Length: 425
Image (cartoon, rainbow, N blue to C red; front, side, top):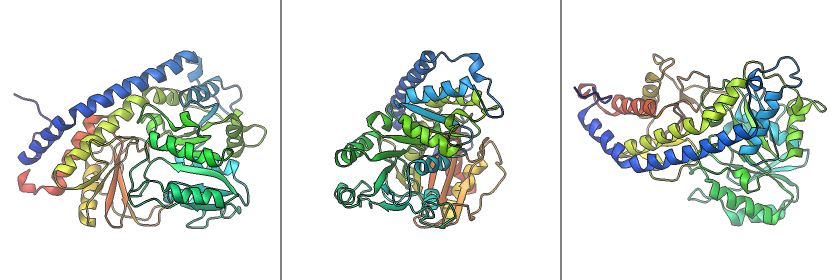
């Protein structure tokens, strides 16, 4: 008897899945080669820095003489081609790491300039664009400006050049790699390389910052290889491989990492204090597994794109497009289908599969959100999840997947539940 995970799915859907698998097979082979290359690089970092059992013990209290913490910083700096790094469980999210990095270098009357359009919702709260919370950049007298994107979602170099020339207070130029909740494509490292060179030619001393959330290991190069000064990301996205329970990282120039350490902790102690307690082993192992798990998630996104396109949905990126992060989007055109699909993904999650997500208000977001996240770590988006704001075009942002197999099963079941009549099941 043939063993098939497709058993019970509608016959027409089974056919479309089989067609999708055949269609994307060469692309998945390319991803496997990329994973192996990135895995080799990570392994060499571990070998070069002589990772030992005692490095995984962790520390308590002040975290004095935590050799494992210091060595992990060195590994991150080595992999990302930067002078220094700070990898900490005390950084509670990617947004926290980004805010820590930006606040560490910006002062009153300085301008933070985003060249990749308006940043996503949680960063808007940090800046003070919405909410005007106490402690926002606006509250501290820090200015903000951005360049609108072109209609095709690419950066407007003409507009950027004018703004760089006219505003003498620009201290930081920020580049957001992932699309956030925008309709644009995420920016590839090649595109970011061009952005960095464009800015550096005009403002040689400006600090160039990269929001790298969702981007790590999704290509064979990172933006810091091409002259970015600071970069931040989350450990419960790509870099933690679904193992790390909390934390984030900041990498960059040594003097800027010192500033970030002083901002996170206190001047004087800086990055040289901070207990790693029971997190350090997971942080090492997560980074080692990250190339593989990121590859599994990307393969899942490619499958998702191919299958949903076959049933007539608007997807971005397309299955054969270059991948620079984990995020796959699908537009449903109406709230009912969006909610139904999101609920179906929750139903095929390992945790809280019996729960029905409902649109609700979430801290840091302006519209009601719907989110499916049956993950082992709360908020982990390297694990399969989907979320989106309840506004036209009713687009879900699907990301993650610890295994390609889980993504295939969950997405296929979600398609069946949402778009096929029960009698066809």
